[in-house]
Image (cartoon, rainbow, N blue to C red; front, top):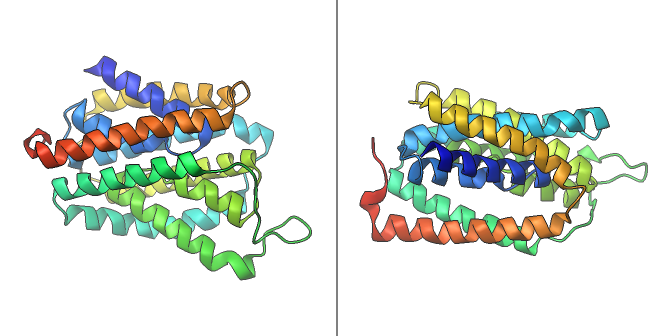
Length: 261
């Protein structure tokens, strides 16, 4: 079992490191169906794994100076209270309903990754290259809050929303968007983990998952210089879509397969 969990950690880490988005979407299904963890334990464990692997992935980017700290703090500040709200909402829903929602979220993420086009927009960019916060602060706060809600509810990082918002709305280039997204994911993961304080955590599984994901996240960052990001993104999107389909079938056709304790 631990070997399979380690392989899942490698895949998630590579995606996070290379794309800054999408990798964490596989953490909860892997923990539930490969490690046999109940959803109540899988979500906080996923938050630990996602937070640590994102921190590992952002470390080499700090030296490059590509993190936009003001942007990260705006998104993170909006996401922290929403993460607590998402955790509270998750406790009021049945595990089966949550997993069905998770499968739908995975499908949306996969489709977005398949359709995403490279290139910066910058609807909120000023002529000097800065960000027009007066116009775009509501949109940034709204996106950050949605990401925080999903983090607390499902244990995902939300990079699939953050990266497009940073490029298309704020006009960040790809390197800055990925690096800044990783910082936001670390902030939201920490908030979500605090919101799930007291939940059961298998520290053996967590350690294997987190270490392999963190190592792979660093490697994933280097991978972006060797392989086209578009190719990596589409290949990973296909994997996510297949897992989403399998998860939906498992929850609807064989609901007893969902671990409850």
